[in-house]
Length: 502
Image (cartoon, rainbow, N blue to C red; front, side):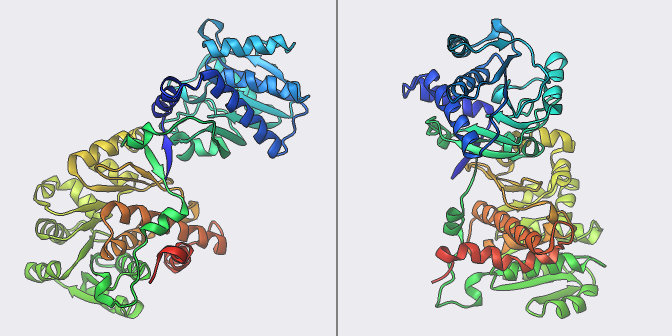
């Protein structure tokens, strides 16, 4: 497990290391500076004419320490202090003094010039206010000046918590961040401004972070392997679950097809599609493995029988917003006694009929994209993006559901679990039907016995990895949702090596 922390969580880890473990702040600063210099050398960056721009806080102290280390390696830097000297931390004052002691001059303004590398050490992770006036102009000039751009811990101007740009931000080619990746470096647009992120271990203890349920995490490949359901030698289709997919409407057979095929490709044993009669023929032709139960009018008793048959239910993809769809969703949520995944139109109907929620008596996964989630929480998409982690935390506390909030960086939130941030996937997946595939993948993992949170985490990762394989084969423009299904096998084989079968 690798944590993705916000500014407050990083500050708490830093203070715990200093106050409880007894590692001085100056020692951590020296380690941070040394690791930055080592990265510059390992990456063979041009250090013939460095410029380091420092602020008043400890990020500036890191910058002054970097300048001293570079000078000791015969790479004297132009050092610019752009902060307020009256606001300097004790550590930063000490670093400025040590730098002057070895004869390095510190100027009080960023000076334009021909630099081989510009090192940003102005604000770091602590910034929460909009950048204006003089600082705005300085960062703008730094961005416009030629040379490799290198950020210390965080590009100045990126919120470490929400990844939004606080007025303006330094546009780095490389960011060396200390001990743990910050949420602002994982989400967009912060990720674009950070360039390539290198995590430097400088000895800050993350022990307290592990018990903070608000701290987000991601996983390494071997950890996904451990979640993957086992395929037993002595098994049959019933072993891997009966999945009922309630999807599609007139002219929307594609959603049901993508749900069901993705579910089969992810290992579900038996998939039944409940869909309008108009979709029967095309689904039977395109996916003969699926059982198709079609309706031409609402039949409560038939639906109740199907709900009783199922081990897992996936409802909503392409369902439409008709009165008939409302009835189907209401009866499903009222009577389902097995875990249920709600997607797409199911969520739009739920936002319209919040009274349906009161009758739910089973485990629920919802898979909204940002617009669908904005309807569920009655906020704008921009408000949701600015506060997604806090909003998700409150939402799952209220309903005790698992929420898969889909975006360029998808977040999985569940009660009593750390929020998970998925780092697989790419922009080639931004096509109609991609979400239908994800719903099928997650539902299939639920059918094979995974709990809601694990199914959502593994499903989101596999969906993204399938997208990575698809882009590698077809490029960034030509990937279709059906291609994600085809490359699910590659994503599964990648982690099946040590975890998939007996």
